[in-house]
Image 1 (cartoon, helix red, strand yellow):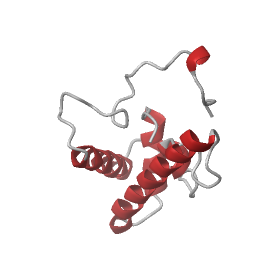
Image 2 (spheres, one colour; image 1 turned 45 degrees about the vertical axis):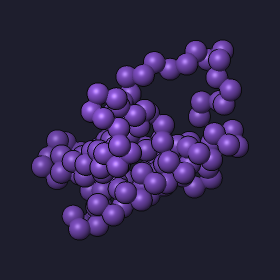
Image 3 (cartoon, one colour; image 1 turned 30 degrees about the horizontal axis):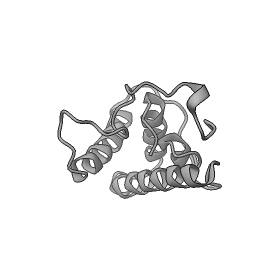
Amino acid sequence: MRPLLHGDIDVAARVLMLLPPEGRGPLIRRIIAEACAADAYRKRHGRAHALWGDGTLMAAALARPCARAPQITAEYLECQFFVLDALLAGHRNTGASSHKRTPEITALKPREPASRRTIPNF
């Protein structure tokens, strides 16, 4: 999966808002898996996956219906929690230590200059 930005978490949470609470955990894990698969596809073929997009969490989430941008409510924050919890669970399963973050968890890694990119940024 490509590095996370705030919008990725926002859109994924808005997709989860359309589901009952018991369906949110399984769906966010599926969306994350689709984003990872789409990123691998993008790297291999140099283009976005037809269903799951460019490897961002946002693109994979937007393959589904999405709630309108909400005001900050308890339900919206709970949905953001589902997203962050699933991302952290995946991070813990990789065995990375807390001082060594993977690119999926941090958006602070500087982007490569455009002149050095080999795959277009979708």
